[in-house]
Image (cartoon, rainbow, N blue to C red; front, side, top):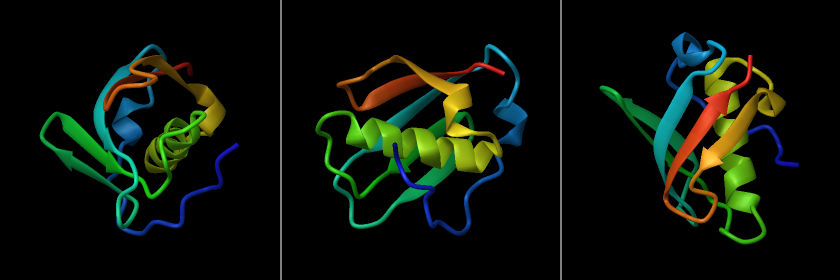
Length: 92
């Protein structure tokens, strides 16, 4: 289970918190710092965690949930478990 990220200046993604919404984003693991940016319709996440045993996916899930204002358990990874481009779905 990933810890709640200690991040300031997260974008407000509460508009994505609708049941069934698919959220596509590009992830960079092993980054210098953790961040989440929104540029138009695209999302980019950087996490400091290494991409092994799902640790980076859990960190991204927690980061995305914090920006959306929901519990991480309400997000599920739909595609991209081992890829940089991932799709999460909000379960509602």
